[in-house]
Amino acid sequence: MNLPNLESARIRTSDATIVKRNDYIVPEDMKQIGKGKYYCLYTYGCQMNVHDSENIAAIMEDMGYKRQEDMENSDVVILNTCAIRENAHNKVMGMLGRVKHLKETKSDLITIFCGCMAQEEGISLELKNKFPWVDIIIGTHNIHKLPLYLKETLKTKEQMMEVFSIEGDIIEGLPVKRDSKYKAWVNIMYGCDKFCTYCIVPYTRGKQRSRLPEDILKEVKDLVANGYQEVTLLGQNVNAYGKDLKIHYNMANLLEDVAKTNIPRVRFVTSHPWDFSDEMIKIIAKYDNIMPYIHLPLQSGSTKILKKMGRRYTKEEYKELFYKIKKIIPNCAITTDIIVGFPGETKDDFQDTIDLVNELKYDLAYTFIYSPREGTPASIMKDETSLEEKKKRLATLNELINKYALWNNQKYLGKTVDVLIEGPSDKDNKMMGYTDTMKLVNIDTNEKYIGKIVPVKITDVKTWSMDGEIIDD
Ligand code: SAH
Ligand code: SF4
Ligand code: F3S
Image 1: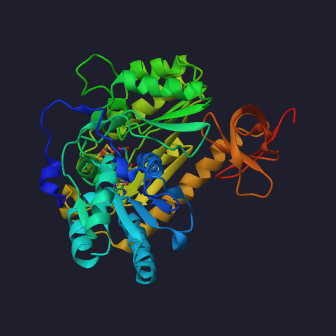
Image 2: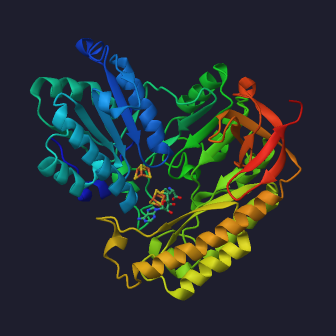
Image 3: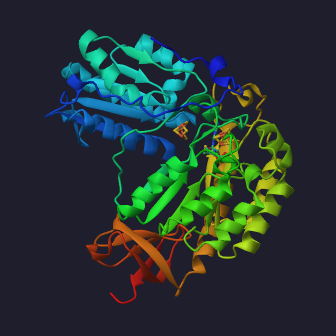
């Protein structure tokens, strides 16, 4: 049994990252263990977790299990968790309550708890002491060992907890069962070394480690050969790609090489403003298949708060970068993340955020109330703002964000834009897809365009989406 430890999770050494290519093993006697059995998989959190779930699904299927949505009739329930904010945590705990209920009538149900929450010290103790019926608890560093843990649990019938608070390796050769046949997530790096004072990710995901360019490019080329239309390059801080490699190769080089594979669409998330180079901006502008869409988390419009957050840029530096991007890539959509109610945020600091949003007029923003995470420096900072006041600030901010989202969308009315049609939308008989600038479009058409990039005329715009029609339908 290995429990997570926050102190160890914080350590960063200069040791080289080890790339492990043969560490995923399904023992012979586990290859058919799931035959005729079902698993269901719940994913919380960011794209990184969504992609990890694609690996977990493939690992389960390598053991013969089939996926289904219905937990009540499943043999294995997997919760791939997120620790970023209190409400992500609460959702998982609520789900754990549902699983417990089911376990009371179905004693052979196997429960697997993985993802970022498993990396938290407090949670691991809670699972050990209060939820002994959770069969397997694994962290973000050892998903590939799932078949071995499952084998052990089936034998011993005891709780198995293996969570490592380490800097981490790179595991190549994991199987993947992608959710889409047209769009694919491709990890380019793991972990984070930025240690923003509010954030748990550097503790749950380990050190920043870039995959080798040849491994990434091989994955992209295989996707192209299989008819994929879009790749999204994934990392907590993709602009820093390559900085930990022993070769001279950076995010601009990678973007260019990925663009040259001729995949129709290249996206990337998330961009920390700190590492955004001029070279990168030029490459994005140069290649038509690199999408003019950048998620550029601001977090706060107050330089004082940014400093307390450890974000390493001032309001002015952020603005300079924003305008540089807009100048070199004029049609670029820019979205952001903003936290309100960080410890010490005064009304004036919040006003700085409002003023900046009024000036930059983001295409969209994801906004959050600050949530203290155990073990992070911000969690022990003095915080005198009431929750009521924080909620008011969030509502004020959201109103403004929505106003500019609509304002930006209105520029599309009557225009014709390329949309990658993904499948049925939530609305009756419509199809949905995204523009190059990541605008959601609902289209009155049928299945024949699924998986294709087609010109669509925008006929109506709303805050969160647009309606359109295919020109020669
Ligand atoms: N690596 C990305 C962010 C990943 S987390 C970046 O640096 O831009 C996604 C978003 O969650 C962050 O941008 C931040 O706005 C929010 N977030 C992270 N920790 C939080 C916390 N403790 N409370 C509230 N929001 C938080
Ligand atoms: Fe968290 Fe900051 Fe790293 Fe983003 S860059 S994952 S906010 S520590
Ligand atoms: Fe959540 Fe972990 Fe992602 S904390 S946001 S799932 S990296």
